[in-house]
Structures are given as structure tokens and as C-alpha cells.
Length: 407
Length: 138
Image (tube, rainbow over all chains, first blue to last red; front, side, top):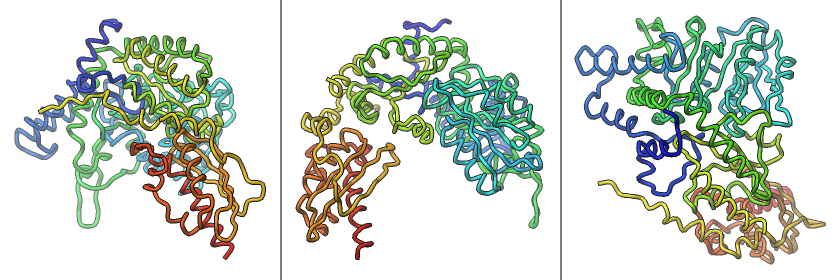
């Protein structure tokens, strides 16, 4: 199935948000995606028909819930080409990275005390490491971005060295939509013996992610940006590394045996899943993946690229528009702009009047915005359920808004 | 059971962006910096990354003159224009008790909850400026 305008109209019918909000043009998919009926139904159906807590419930209902939970894990592992036991459930990308920042110390090699990030990190892949650096007296370095907003890979080679304990990088920038060559950065990291972490929050539902192909040690993403419910996220980690790490939370389910004085920890992945988990969330995430695979990741990537190229070509013609685009390629589903004399928050509020939902502001990337000398941008982020008509309406509205600010 | 939400019932944006508000954004009142201010203060809004700089001239415990400058959205610039107009000639003590409702009265537009911070920033900056400097001078 090749996605086209006609097919998008059919796809939109799977997303009840559009039926319940006639005229809604949703272009804030980088903040969160809408949810298809299949995902919503899988969650309500679980609560209506199958609800029970998992593990150690030796009755049918609990055994079924355990099976649903673990079968879902298999689907998610297969989706990113991970081995069994390498997918750990968290709340979201932020929690996955926080988990790492607390549990990673046993993996850090002697004498290494530097963390390498990029200048385009979301606060969620920056602040946890700032805190880590404070706790362990580490130094944070940043791979610079170039004038064309792409990462400076030569600088990455310069900054990395025998002091680098870990390199953590965003795959697709949530603010500018730049697609980083994470495979290359992982290679650079590996060469100097650093631990490699990828923040895949903005890529996992827009392109095929294969953790073996990327070669990273860890990879984090959120369910809610990929059609799944809020409150379920994933941390992928290589088995031998997860085994060496200390647990994040302590309590039920993450133990093998407990005495009054001590406890031994459970095997992977349970070692990192203390307490009752978001079972319906996991089931919803697996259903979301089934939906994404039914549409096809290659298909999604190709269609979103078409949308991006179409909108960039049109938006360029608006007088006084400043686009924050990479010159190299237009491969992502996100782009940012500013309208001359207009604050992003005003643009967002005025677009909302025409039923168009976008995001304006610093996008949790304040250091990057400061570097660019702006307080924020207007950000458009697509999903495969957007079409050319959505973009035409956006351009129309932007032209109207432009008349208010630049006449 | 299910109620349909009519998306086009959104009148707030139209009501917020009245022509006189937009005019205040294009040509703000009291924009700039006083040459010899008694007090100065810069305030930063972490929500939107905007910055406002206040300069105030005080005479006999009253605001003799006030200027502001900085970047901001339509609502924050309009609010800064009108609040600086309002407090000229006011006693410091009276300025310090101005609140959200006073601002909404001056602006005469409905403000959505997410944009409330935008209109509050200028008043907050003025109050912080007066409190901070009031303390250090006493």
C-alpha cells in the first residue's frame, strides 16, 4: 500500500480525534501523536475483559494478562530488532534516560570523566546528564552544530577521546527536525570505547529503527509519540550491559529472593521493572506497532518526506519567513520557522483560530534557541495521517497572519 | 453519550487579538529606556524565553516615569504598554498591590489560561524591580 491523499482520508477514519473535532488540522505530532481506534480499543478491551495483575497469579485471568504483557514485549523487541530481554518498560524517553543516568556507573571505565552530547539535545537528554556530572564530578562536552544546522562530525571526532565515558545523542532533533547520522556517531563513540546512547523519541515512528544496524548500546523512546497511550516508554539496552548495571527502582517483581536483611535481583528485563507495570500501556504500545507496521515504516518515511518537501516549497514563498532547515536533505517529518515581526506564541494562537494545531516556543531546547539567537520557533511536525490539504490550509492561514504582522 | 466538540467555536483568539491590541504591539507606549532611571530591572520568562527590561524614575514615592523594552508576543507587549501607562503617577505601594484582575480590566480582552503568563510578565517585572530596589535603598 502506497500512501496517497486518498488513502490518508481512509487512514484518518481510524483516528476518532478527527471525527470528534471536525476541521482539526493536527500538525503537532512531535509533541504527541493521535491514537487510532485499534489502540484505544485494545486498552479498553483489556480493562473490560482481561484485567488482572501479571506474574505469580496462578489463575487463568492473571496468566492471560502475563501472556499479553510478555507477548507485547516480543512485538516491541522485534520492531527494533532487539534480542529478548533487551526491552525495558519505562514511563517515557525522559524516564529511560534518567534510568541510565542513575544506573550506568558500573559500565563506566576507569579514568573516564567526560560526557559527550550534541548542541541540539532536548532538555531530557541534557539535564539528567548535568545532574549526573554534578554527582560524579564529570565534565559535559557538546558536538557543535554548523551554520546549516547539521552536526559537525569533524567536531565530534575532535571532542571524543580516551576521557569520554559516554556519548548520548538525539536521532532526530525535536526542534529543527535535523536527522543525525547516529550510526556514524555510534562508530565514533565505539572507536574510543565510549558507551553510546540514542534518543529515538522523534525517529521511532517515522523511520525503521534497527538497534543492531545503528549499533548503539542503549536507545530510548516514548509510546505516546508513536500512536500508543501516555505513560509507556522503552529503554533498549544490550543484554550484557544491562546485566552489569544496578537496578533503578527497588521493590516487587525485580527480585529473586528477599530476606529481612537482603535481596537478590531478578533476571532481565524484570530487574528494571519494579512494582506493578503499566500493563494496558504495554498492550497499547504493541497494538500501535502493529498499526505502524500495517501502514509500513518505509511508506511512512516516504510520505512524510513528500509532505515536508511540499510544505517547504510553499512556505518559502511567504514574505518574511525564516526557515531553520538543513541544506543537506529534507528527510524528516519536522521543520521550524519564524514569521518576521511575529512571536511564535502569537502565530500558534492565531493558527488555532483556523483549527490548525502547531507548537511554538523553545521546544525544550533552550540552549539551542539561545545559540540561534531566538526565543523560539513555530514548529510543524507531520504524521502519516496528514495530507497536502492540511498543508494548503496552513499556508493560507500563515498568509493571513502575515498580513497582521507585516503589512 | 459522546458529545461532539465544535472546533470552530473558538472565539478567544479573535477576541484577544483586537485591533487596538495589535496597534499597541506595532507601536508600543513607553517603549525604550529612561536616561536617568532610579531603578532598573531585567526579567526573564522561562516559558517563552522572552525578556523585558524595566527602567523607572521615582519621585516622592511615586512613579514619575517608566519605560520598558524587550522582545515579546503581542499580548505581553500590549500588556506592558498599558500597565506602564496606568502606573505613571501612582504611588509605589499602590503599584505593588496591582494584580491579574487589574490587568484584565486594563486590557479589556479575554485571556486563555495558557497565555495568562504573557500578560503577567510586565507587571511582575515592575513589582520585582520596585521591591528589590526598595529594599536595597532602605
